[in-house]
Image (cartoon, rainbow, N blue to C red; front, side, top):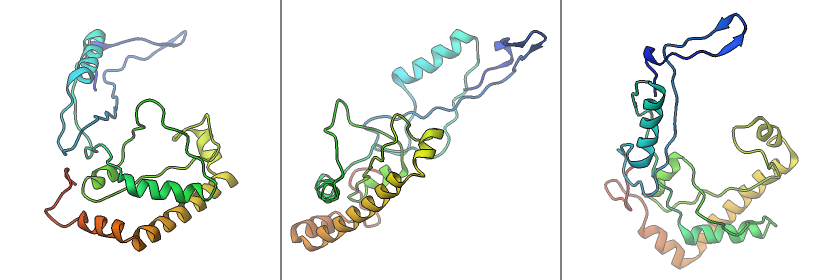
Length: 188
């Protein structure tokens, strides 16, 4: 979003200093549930909210898509259940789901539409800090974070072994394996 020169504003930083920007930029990440294709245009309530903000401030608005469009993640539930059981065997705890499903943005989501996938997450006692905060960075350098990495890797390795030795799982996964031109419902 960019504001044109007609949308000048003043901010008093010191008694004698004013800033009058001619242009400001904003970057937004919009996650659209049910998005299963690579070219999605911003529409509906999100677009009206952005347009309304522009009109309310007298700014001009230009929307320029940047980077790839990430789809909704499609979790392979049998694979996820196997991983969860393995992580729980390492005393990892998974709180019961509450409300709507957790969402995020990753290029792995696009891949999940083509091949069976999971994107497990393990906690390491960092709350209330979350990703991209300095407190999270500090917590990520702890023994608890190191243990989460080890537990996650071991649970994933056990999951691969479990899926490989289970005839029904192996057959199911082989039948849904990616091949050029064949997709489970999305695009890469």
